[in-house]
Amino acid sequence: MLPARRKARTLGEVYRRFGEVDAAETSPLSARVAVALSESPEALRAVEEAPARKRHPALILAVLHDLALAGRAPALAAAHAAGDGDAAAAAAVETLRQRPDAVGEIAACRRLLTDETGRGAVLSPAVSEAARRIGARSVGLIDVGRPAGFNLQVDRVGITYSNGQSWGDPMSPVQLSPSIVGDRSVPTRAMPDVVTRVLVDPDALDVTDHDDARWLRACLPPDQMKRAEQLDAEIELASSAPPVLLRDDLVGVLPEAIASVPSKALPVVTTTWALSRLSPEKRLRFVQRLTDAAADRTVAWVSAEGVGVAPTVPTLGDRPASGHSIVGLTVIDPSGRRSEAVGRCWSRGRMLAWLAGS
Image (cartoon, rainbow, N blue to C red):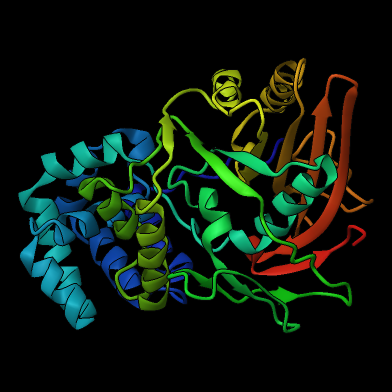
């Protein structure tokens, strides 16, 4: 006998679950707003003005936050500033009731972006290691699949690891404090000169654009002040050295991105939890594109992806979905491709176990 098919949740049930379960511990204000929306037929009808795939509570709450930050929902902005959950809930319902078209318009053209910050602590030693192995004095950084482009500033951050090691610029507005797991030190050799910064993503944001920078802030719940401070620092740093933006298919535009790196510099492609959005077949095409681009020059690929997500990168016998990710270093040149797992990391790079030899 076939099991009974579980009844699909209504939109109201989805919002209530988000408030009572998903957001309850991380953002009490967002939790209160989501529950209020779940109880308002008018608010839910306004949510339905957005395309079906754009009705997720986290995205709609980000849209409301964006309207507040833009001065288009002053009562909601005041409630956010005061940290008043009840007032924010009432203002959110009223904003949706009064501005359903604006909510639907913003939701249709934006993608929810979270956990964009803090990855330099994993990328910096791996990029430096790639340059050391090739003997490169300069690199061109090409980040794929992270719309904010913060990974392209890895040479300009300051890092203090939990074992006392330090790296980078102690005066940088972005200061990271990752934990080291295990007893192996992270190599903290100097980063080579970065001569090119290229961001590849169909939804790439221009952090020097006021609307794009505001959207990044809107994606954070308004009561997460520490994360907002770190995000502002990342935006400040990226704005002072903005990358070239290639708003195109992640795989198809790779040759163009690599070709933009001067011939004397090493192209270093970085991916951080980006390939999981691609099908397994497209991940293989990604690697093939890298290989094609390396027909007449050396290319390096630094990856931080879930276990088994990055093709060719060893998994060290770890199981997929095991709670950590593999930091991979792949070097491709006309003679072939060599991939190594140089580290494990947890919490999107906030904890790192370095594995490669010093």
